[in-house]
Length: 86
Length: 412
Image (cartoon, rainbow over all chains, first blue to last red; front, side, top):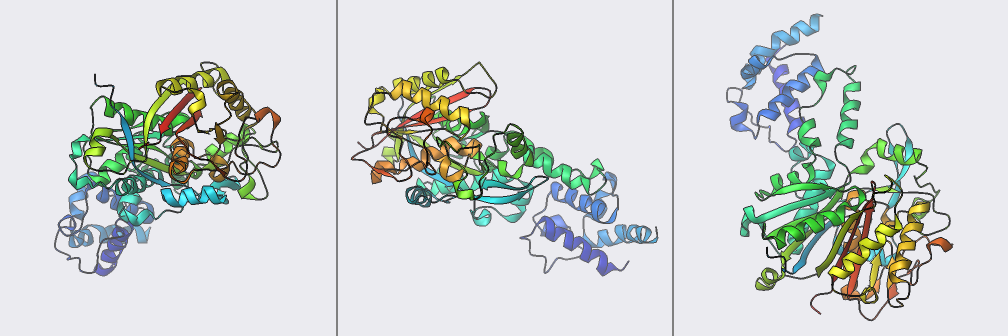
């Protein structure tokens, strides 16, 4: 799966979680928590939506991998590919 | 213990099926406008319900609303509106001296039903059960959401008191002010019950759910053709202060809470007990330091069940039988039974009578049940009177919980 697709999916999920957030200029290499009003419950929402929408599991120890959009791409792209081939 | 304090209402915020402010609600009650409609509910199809139409986003960001509950959202709206009406800003208050006391009939039923429905789509995989479920369903949720939204750091909790909860929340606020625990109380009741199929289904199984081709005519307390309860959502939060504090800041004063009482039937989980209801009203009137003949309006609890209405009428005749100047009315006939909000909303709907000298009616009475006959029941059209001095507000609930509150006109 391409970088943009993963980013789009994460931003789409964030738009659901935080409907009032301005997502027009989210930087890929900056922690999401540092540029958006997000807390640990929001990250649990992202994990939940990945599970519900794409059957992707993110173990607790891997949560730091989702800190930035770039981190999401690196961590999730192989998982999306794996899901796509099953 | 400084129990001699005088406690006044300085603000009201509310949402009812026929009005989202004290003034619009009052106008609807005087004009005979119902708020009952027909809605689709899970598993049951269409049911009759009182539905509120306030703007959830007026005081709450969408993210906060998504995390929270309908009851929390109703509470937040009502609390903000009440503070505005009281001419108070949280920024100007000692946040640690504001108490939040919200009556609820139940809480968590809606959220639990929704979550079960949500995981049904994932083959009941409990890993898809929301991490928001617990903060949504803790019993203090509707009060706690107010404090989170407004940044209030004083005590908050809900009072579980079945359908006497609106009065119970108000009484709790009065008591905490008398004890000096807080300086401002946000007190009242809320209900999100129309979003639970289980509440409708349980009333239906009890043969106590109203049916009518015209939703606006479905809730008919004291009428021969009454056939049950119309469930409603809603909320009402009062700002309460000590009289001396309110006077000092030149606050608008809507009335003084001069009497209250609560007791228990100790007889049956569902059927009301007229002797205990009588005792409850008499205790509240006695605490107010008046006689029954001095009450101007009795705002009844009657929900339009066959026996409940008769039992309350029996108690009313016992207390007010010979008092020719006491008028009786019922707010549920307009909006349905707003459960935890009912007592608070019904009191709020009558407060305007201190100013406009009108007593709103009980609508939908076309054939009065003789067993429900009480002297001066205001039927279908408002009653003009010279002056309203005292309002007695009844609110009762399952497991035999009774409450009565007396509010006096102020200033005299």
